[in-house]
Length: 426
Image 1 (cartoon, rainbow, N blue to C red):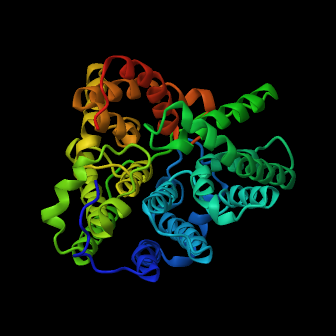
Image 2: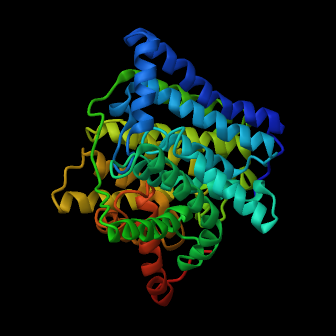
């Protein structure tokens, strides 16, 4: 269902680029300011960025704990600027999927992705475009999401088994290989769950990560998951996120003055891939939905006693990004309820980072509740928690989108059963 968007202010491509350039600009300025306030720019930023680049980055390596707030903010801003440069250089239309990819990559720059380990994957994608004689811009989104396997580059590059230069070369080669093969893999994997798992590359990366990890294990190279976490709430971080999400809501109202009146219309969409809100309801409502979802996620995490650290910020940013491409409160809530209820039933600590990020990332299954209803959404959330907390061992933590992998398994398992006994919502 398309709504009338005649009340929207027209946004040119440069306007949209400027809107999203605010994110890396804010992180860059705030990162430098915080470092200067904390201990001096030279000492904290240099050592912090070095620690981030040299860390293995596998699940869960929180850059806020590894490199500090200032250095992490700079890492996030540099990766944000790089992806914004690609979007501008290749003249990509800023639609819902581009927004989702951009903010997801920025979110995971708080844990897992750094300015060293993502570039080989982009280079591999570029080589693939040359090999297939297609324009690189046609696969940039896939490559952006494929950086979920960036920890493979770091883990191999900084192994102590071989001399450092050789290890780094091998790590870069692995990253290039991932970028080279991920696009054809992803295009076939989506058939497994018929668009009901929004994080398509998460499932693909899970399969590919499993193959790579198994290959390394066969060579007696074991990749063990780690848990390095920033363990306290920092009001500076919370304030920064709040500013950005309020900014999105403000832009939404500025672009579409009828945002508040029309907002409920977004709930009529199931979220099944492809649901691009920039096309269906316009940029105003899309930005407003993104801001609302970001603030609701923050309130939820803080209300249950959780910590807004690197992995949690990645979860929040991913929800916000995909709130331009399928997610809204109505189709996400049942999934989160299912995950929360299961965690409580199994006597898990719901304030732990691992449980919180499972709840946030579980919204990859939002289309299931959007199509089959509230109760089925809760069921999907239950199954997701069970799988997400157990499948990480398969890929050894090298796939940052572990919940996308689990979500693909849940959707692939549920859909044939649901189609046999339930009717899909129109």
